[in-house]
Image 1 (tube, rainbow, N blue to C red):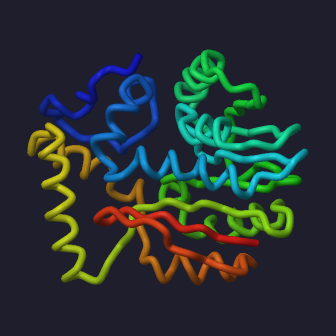
Image 2: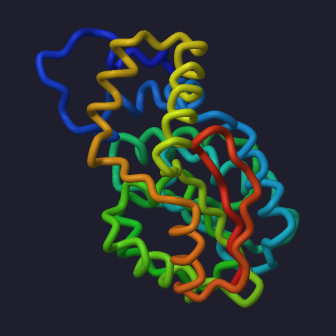
Length: 241
């Protein structure tokens, strides 16, 4: 069972770079619900998208799977037979907990939880892939090769759901940041928690403009790139091979 996020609730002498360690894994469901506007809806809609695009005998990939929420949404959304879901995360703390959560889930589609680097995963015979608030943690220079690998592993007509925190022109960024921090305050985070987490994520989570994501996905070989959700400075795109 998830605990309440208090990772940054105490004054720290120095704020270390954010990492998905045991402390974060223990509170992750609470942390992400209170930190990402519309997170639950995005996850549930990925299940709906999986229901539309999954094909019999193919694989679905949850890349940067954390505790497996997206994999589980896919698992409950698909209606076709003989599918397999591959959930990949490079945090041992996350994958260990993810395996236990998957084991307690009621759906029958097999889920293989892999502790590894998504940049090194072979994407094969895929109908659906998801990068749900994951690409933003990958070094910028590695993002296009990763997307090309995903695109090449998708069968024709397959889709990638890419959800990200966005960067905006300065004036718009200031407005959206203000609203976003209001959202965090409304969810019970203190000024100290907001400040310390912002410092921890600096140079770890690197957001980019929507136009950059669109062009990169097209450069990777996707045919259509469709923004379908935005909540303040968080968005989700559907890219079709």
